[in-house]
Amino acid sequence: GDSVTQMEGPVTLSEEAFLTINCTYTATGYPSLFWYVQYPGEGLQLLLKATKADDKGSNKGFEATYRKETTSFHLEKGSVQVSDSAVYFCALTFYNQGGKLIFGQGTELSVKP
Amino acid sequence: EAEVAQSPRYKITEKSQAVAFWCDPISGHATLYWYRQILGQGPELLVQFQDESVVDDSQLPKDRFSAERLKGVDSTLKIQPAELGDSAMYLCASSPELGQRAYEQYFGPGTRLTVT
Image (cartoon, rainbow over all chains, first blue to last red; front, side, top):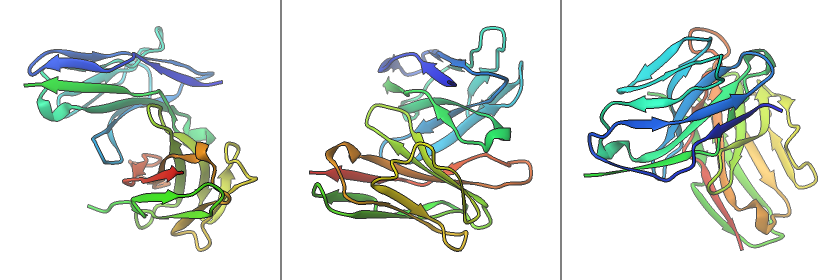
């Protein structure tokens, strides 16, 4: 079945460091891809999305490019802040199948001052 | 900005008791989702509604879980009887059906259930 795999955490970085969180997917067809963020004690928030190959989603300094050839959607940020500490989830969906999200297991990011 | 509301935020119940969670989606959102998130894992869909109709409940343990959205607005998820393995965060999400943000899901804060 369709699935999403993320790099294991926790990831610990110093403030202003470069961030990469790897995400790969397995799917029959071409899904839409998302990154969601979950801050402590809160629900999930959509961070960015890409709906077709080579699309780049971006928001709040975060970027991810939909790579069909490597079935990947890696999340990057050039300079992380303490406020970016959260759990990040990669997810996919097929809109013609009702739009349910299939999530990866999440990657916890901790940014130290 | 409109938000998805859920209550209660926290619930502690004993094994074999009944428990219910409530969700009020963003006004006008036709699609409503219930997800279960076990600690350290990503959310998994339990049930999806389009208006008042169930469109996907393939992962809902129907022997103990039930869900309804009677007027196509708010929704209730019930567990009876609760088991220790049901301890998790229960997330509700809603999405519009049309427009530029069609199918983008907006999540509520969740209900953290602990079964003792």
